[in-house]
Image 1 (cartoon, helix red, strand yellow):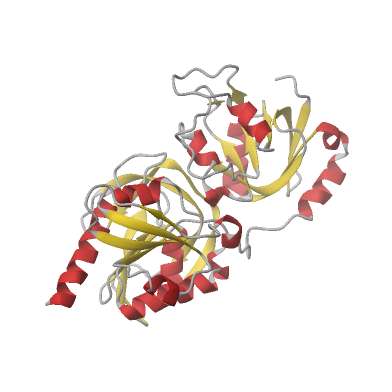
Image 2 (spheres, helix red, strand yellow):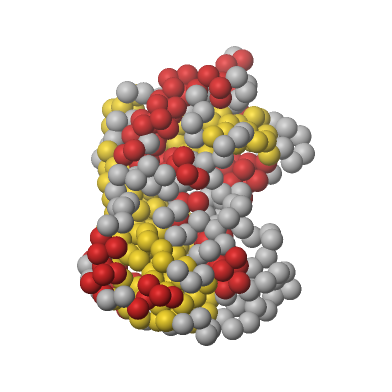
Length: 378
């Protein structure tokens, strides 16, 4: 690409040399990998990747360029980008430019030309860890100097990042066709396709800041509350947990995904923990324990809920149970309350990018709100 040398330095001292890709400079974040073979633009613009240096396991990246239709937010959120073989040209009828030009425009520092398979194997064995990408003058410093900078960067454990990614002002996505329900979507790092999937089902979606109070949300006359995906350590999400608890107490229908699943878990009295290297990609197998059905799903999470398997368990809001598990490693992928109208999954049913296996969960949310409405009128 002709932009000079670049260096990737992991916190355990492993160093990999390649070529500068995207903006020239220095960046720090948690080194992770995603197994998706497509959907790189949706990945880059997913707020859940805030403060993470993302490695693409698929070797050839950028061949369809970028466009104005696929972004999941108003900007690229990854802290850095690692690819093996960037495309020299962008070839797609929707393309408005090249991926590298967009990375440069948004100041995203990356590295190309390294063995991403070796890096992925390293992260699988050692776990996700802090890293830095250095290009330009910084790439000329000694490995010891670069490692010192990496070790001085913040860890993901204990990181409270929702305020960084949440909307500052509420906004409304109108229902498509007849408005059947009104939902408040608590923006912990929401993707654009998520409220659209609800709007398709006749839901008027009020996307509200993460700092909203329960009374502010109730004042909108909502039929349900949705808790979105987002970055950071769920152990820091005390305000979101308090919000969740308020609506569980009200018996308002609640649906959470990803970070929202972890928030529901904490509201139910469960703990969360950091996964060794997380689940990131659009090809993760999940089993619905009630039906036995296996779904191929889109994931982006480095933390998980610690919940008992098998029989239901007691919570401050009645009985609840694990509804879904990952078939790769048995991680909890969903929770369902038995005595209050609330459920959640650890993955992305909006499918942007990803398979459409889990989109029915939005229909289940509609059914939950309809049943709650009928129960109140009975």
